[in-house]
Image (cartoon, rainbow, N blue to C red; front, top):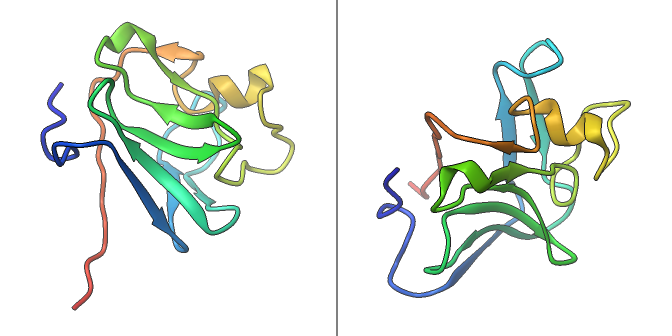
Length: 116
């Protein structure tokens, strides 16, 4: 995996008020959905010591893409709103996006809007 687009040479925290995660396919067969940001704050962490991380609240991450793909993990619901009937730190939430808590990513896409 290549992270060069994400790293600026130092540890960075990205803050915004209008971020979301989305899923086109998921473990539970739900229709495509968007998970909006719960509140203004840190939505991405870019540290040189490990791969990109999305969501950051109370020292917990929603999605972490590890330098070692076998230790990438999902634990959504800390910074981003889960679909109805899903609760942070539950097995149901942790397996929603990738089918298991730990996963090996095959493709990650990150989009961002620039000011025009």
